[in-house]
Length: 239
Image 1 (cartoon, rainbow, N blue to C red):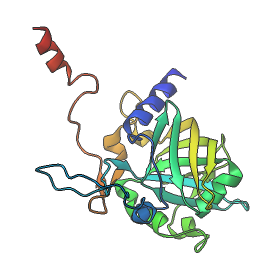
Image 2: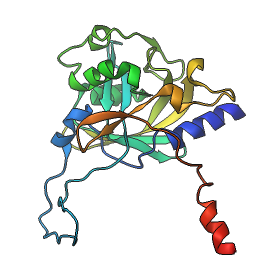
Image 3: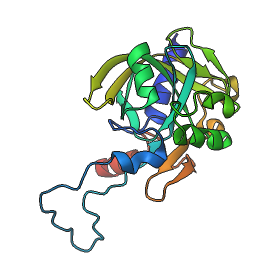
């Protein structure tokens, strides 16, 4: 139990590294969900190129949301705008998609992460709606098993999965909703664990969505220690 809690904390702090957010039915649809330009006058910042309200938030995890419909058919979609919003909670905002309807009915979903080795299938899940292609999971060559903890599928081809139950589903009046899920369990394939039994992102190779160029990037190299690299400044102040 203690090790599971450590693994869960590691994932929620290390992979879902975007706080609060909105979501889309695929990274390529982000522009359709952006807010209109503000009506207030925006003053430019001197000596910089100014873009008004158009923004780049980085990194954006490419999260894969898996659900069942009312007939028990599995669906998977990609959402680039989602992230952690509490110690055991994640959030995303969806417009009127099949995934939204599935979550509305089942009150559950699973979250996995697009990786370098499955980026073709993951991007496909973000491009195609289950309304149009009900068997898109099968067409992608992926398989699922039912989660033992929530009424949602676990995608076998994704080695890391969060099983979530819905704790908030705020309707927007247009068929969409802001969703908050509580993680009840995390499971990982042993192939992505290190010698200490922790999730190893070098082995997982999750991708992030680069909204500045509409491309995917693999999570990069280690550059420092959390709550450690800054000690050099603190120690220098003491001296």
